[in-house]
Length: 453
Image (cartoon, rainbow, N blue to C red; front, side):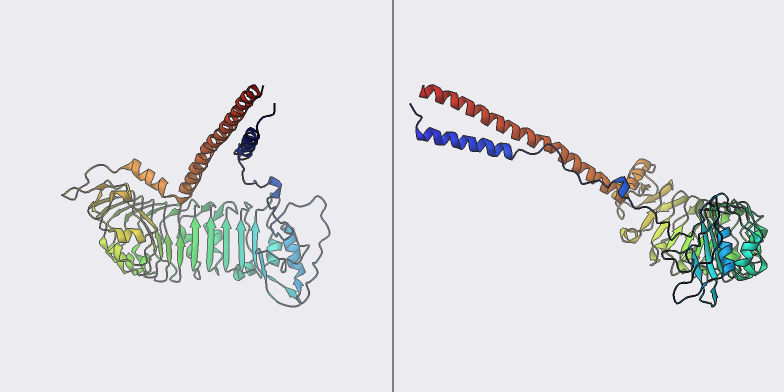
């Protein structure tokens, strides 16, 4: 006996339904964006590098590079000088692309070097008086990660140099050695030990200097009372300078940047500090300075960055700071300020950085500033005194939460975790529906066979 056509139609529909469910079941394998292969990362192009390289075991005969079309070649004496410093000269150093380590003039028949940077020197590189004498046309000479021994510079090179820097380079410099570079307008020495009784030993002879950085150099002594009036930038950070900031420093009306942080300077900030009318960036952080913030600072119209943190400054925070329209960075943390914070939300919100935590006698008016700002200080009571100790833990959590990089990564991680959690639920649901449909089909076929039999 054949089953009725209606039953065959129902059976066909059930089979189609089961097939569709199994096809739409979510795949348990999560697709991930392809990760770059380690071999696909770009490798540095050494073809155009002028950084010193180790001397080969067999030194080729020095050859003068052929001049490029339309320009003259480098002076052969200077080519030999570069080769003695392990700088490749297979191509004309004046015309190599993607190189900022040399700068040449356009003289004929031979060009001459005006600027040279020695970076990441190999252990067998050594300065020679002969090579430096051949390079006496240099106006700028820079050492970067070249811990080689300094030597006396030829007089012609000393007269020509206008810019000199040594960053993590030239072992055991002395103040007398630096003071011989009398025509410098720009001096940078950082992460190099400098043996001098004070900055004046160096700066006393450098009458043309406009920018000086001697940082993290273990420099001792006091801030010079007399400096070059043309100075626009001073950075003596990370040394062992002591004593007071001399009031005579305020006559440097062209000074734009002053960094004296991380020393052991003491006493008060000079009351005439506001005479530095060209200042844009000031950091006196991590010293032993005391006393109030001078009112004269309000007269500096273009001040952008003011860091007085980690000192022993006291008194109240002056309200005039909120009237300084150019100010974007204000750090007064870790001092002994007291009283009520004189700022409103409008002023704080315009700052890129604002820190006043770790001032135990400082408080804020909770009717003006919200506790959501996480200032790291307590609200004031009706007498203008802190109601409770500063919420240090909340302040640290506020600092962490303010870091947008961490916020973004955490948010992405949460969303990924949620996606990963919801994935298996959909898979289980699909499998369950498919299995239940299969069981129903088997039962239906058994009943159908019995009915037909």
